[in-house]
Length: 231
Image 1 (tube, rainbow, N blue to C red):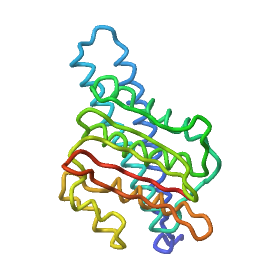
Image 2: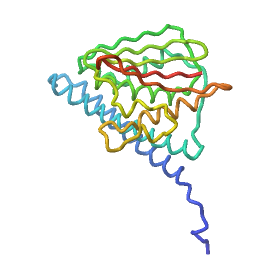
Image 3: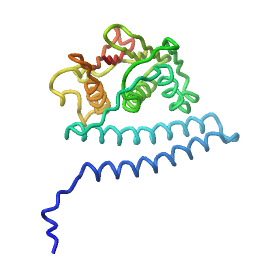
Image 4: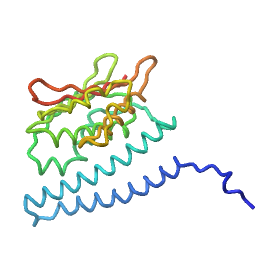
């Protein structure tokens, strides 16, 4: 008789499979929401409600992926596939992913990046990272969000700026060695996305260089700047 107690339960595999199934279901929901938004009999307010529903569903999808990545990182099992990618295509994809929100909220978005700029990074993880930061910038901005990317040796640098009220004080210590200092489940903005961003940035390494993130609040509560540096 097989002794079940001696079997090792691979929770990471179960978690990955469950999240994969949930993400497939959420993909169908997102597609249905996008189809709904194409209806020509919706009012402006209804379009806005649909876009908010799309955002919340995307947020669940993003959170699931972040949880899986953080769990795998804790178990030293986070897969990183670094290859050469087009930065312009990456940013275009992020804008398209958030098209519904952009179309129904009066926020101006400017993108400043060289057409042929390329870099070495895990395109899926960095895309999730920047998209999460971007959509939060849209939510908190008053009128404008700026995305920029450029190479400044020895780093490829991404910046997302907004004109909102800035990051809460407890999030400004994101680069502290104490990882828990950024994450606070009792706050409206828990910081989970920033913890994920920090992990993904640090997973990108080249010789002695390691990726990093930085948060800056502009003077007089005039906005915030998120910076991602990848070697």
